[in-house]
Image (cartoon, rainbow, N blue to C red; front, side, top):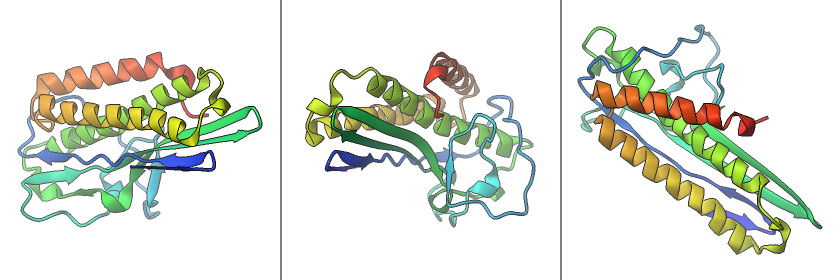
Length: 202
């Protein structure tokens, strides 16, 4: 969905993933962040040093879905022109209040960590597409000569590409249950993030 007005706008992508159960060992678990007594914020920006933890998933689990977790992330994109001066901000964000986990469904030893690894890669995919958007916008010729509708259409392209990648990721990994596919996706997304390091959020 998108909204762009007066050359300032927000384009948001909500991505949901239902991790199916039971999970098989898929990949090394992500490094766990130190436990905190502070409540998780409603939104969490993507960070290389602050991975997701299950306490970030604050919504009530959906009943009867057969899923163990749901991750909701967003790409927000803001653009603005002042004369010929073009500015933009692109962020990958996780929504705590719209993401949930039912840890009782992770019955195999370590499966909750493998499940968290799967959800983290969903978030990493969102950041990967945010970096692609930052690269594109930083190289865009004469952006302030474009209309609001044209800029919105360009932003929608990254939203659609991100959604397609999220859907393909779940299909190919079978929501994290195919360990070989999960490890491949983890590696490919990590490599792409490294290749786009110059376009990480400052």
